[in-house]
Image (cartoon, rainbow, N blue to C red; front, top):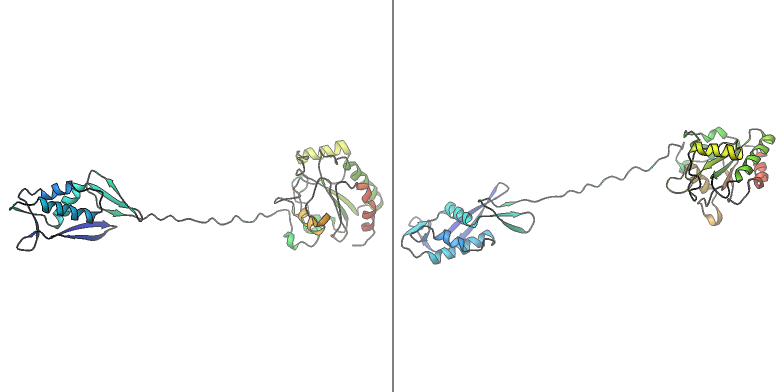
Length: 306
């Protein structure tokens, strides 16, 4: 005896064949022998519905064979057998890869197999951060004049404007123990300007990275320096001197003139860098070095020709 169960798998028909020797009609069609015509349905009701379809059909047919003792044959052809079996079973088989689960349902439904594919899209790395204040990449910078740090108004200031001059660069703060060095810097500025006119300049770069000692805005900083120390040399815009956001100028200065034991990092407020007429770094001094003590070094650079 053969019962054909058709399963729909994404539009394709798959035949499940279950053979059982019982009675056959003269034309070879299968039959289950019992006059009531309900043998197969009764047999199907006694088979656990969680079994796989092919196993379930086999067991249902075996039960039907045991129950089918009547002389009046009842034909269950391939479509009828499948429909009767599935209607008694009342289940839906849903396969989502690769295991099969069985869920009870109130109506006949074809067996469906679906596969869910999850695609992971790798986001591209964000572009490297660039600095609008540089003329060229720091790696290709050859001198102090290649940079454009921001001024007190937040605008790029080309350091090429100081070409041929000797420049003292200091990272400053308004609430630091070294803040009184503003007075020494102002005195140095005035004394050397009197002797060398426009050949020397001091640039102050406020920084809040050391103890949060420069919390104010650019306007606050300008006002503080003028009211408390009468500063007349240029105070630039507030920047970082260390870390990922360090201004490219200070990255270059530290690289050109490392500190003690080759340490490049700026350690505290009021470190000092001296740049000669040729745009090269000539020296670096710690926060504890008083500005007035640098006059000799500055004069040596002023006496050189660019």
